[in-house]
Amino acid sequence: MRIEVKGRNLAVSDDLREHVAKRFRKVERQVSELAELEVEVFEERNPAIADSQVAEATLHLKGVTLRARDASPDIMHSISLCADELHVQVKRHRDKRRKRRESRAAAAAQNVEAGPSVEAVEEAGVAGDSADRTGMSSAA
Image (cartoon, rainbow, N blue to C red; front, side, top):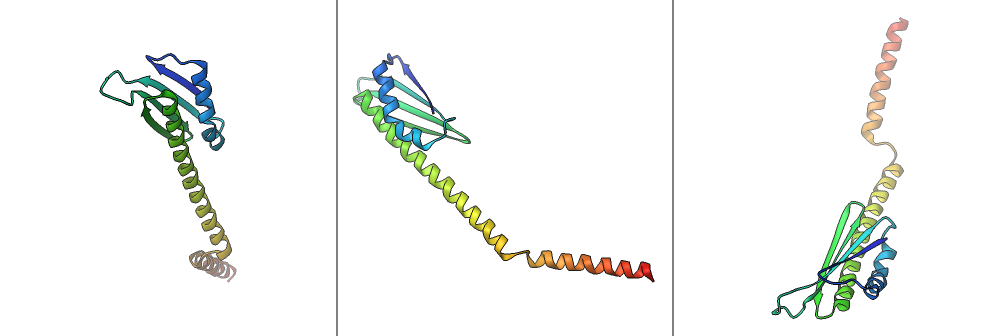
């Protein structure tokens, strides 16, 4: 997974990058190597907002984009909260995909076990009857 850390009006240090990589390791194990994670950190300028340190994470997967946003007084804590929230979303997304795939496989296996449908047998019988009739009429 490719991780990109951006700071909006905030310097991004190596410690911050390492913390992001460490906290999003759970997410990294669950997604493909082609996934792209963008983490944006910034500080709210409004002094009335106590949770001024904000972290936003956007995870681009094949066919879906997951987002998480958390704020707290400490930027490291905001990143941790964001990582936990995104981990839950990824897990839910994977479970949903797995469940859908298993139900489709079960339905396909059930169709194979049942054999050809009654309609397919009837159509084949009707087609066979007409072929026999035409064969008889041409021979006579």
